[in-house]
Length: 202
Image (tube, rainbow, N blue to C red; front, top):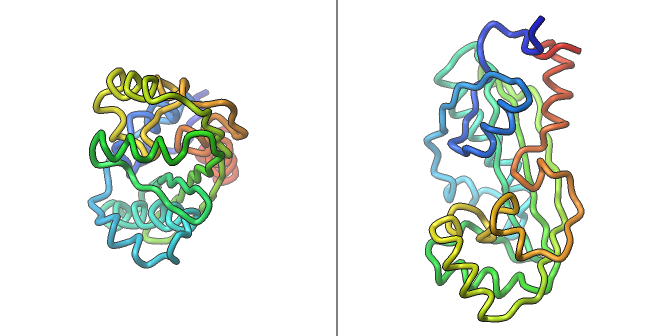
């Protein structure tokens, strides 16, 4: 008997290969349908500097946007934001911006917020927000140059200019968080919801 009990796959409102891989590794069939959303416009509706609220809002709006086009389907939206104190970070646009972000984060502990939202027929079914405390080590300019060269275009793919599942792990001293939260999808909370609603075997 399969773990997944629904007759159709879960719709993932994200183009993230990492989120897709997390869900598929957990035995959840996925249909990818990225949201066509102006994220910057959505962010303006949140309180200034409120990285946690921005993550929650973007996850919800992505799911709502896709669910409106796919009636009857369960849609999962997800987003991740980063804050250092009152300063919120976006994905760096280029290598110089990535360098500036990493210089600002070096030797400090920042907060990485990961939010998910499940929507069906324009109704929010469940949402969850988790936070990871990430302590970046102090490093030399020579190391930073080497890291940026080795990571290449990947430094502009994620907020904070790192992926801990890759070369970004070299940037860190410690972190205090669930692994999946760091990767951008609080999986245990998602699985609890899916089991409670009968989408997964309980």
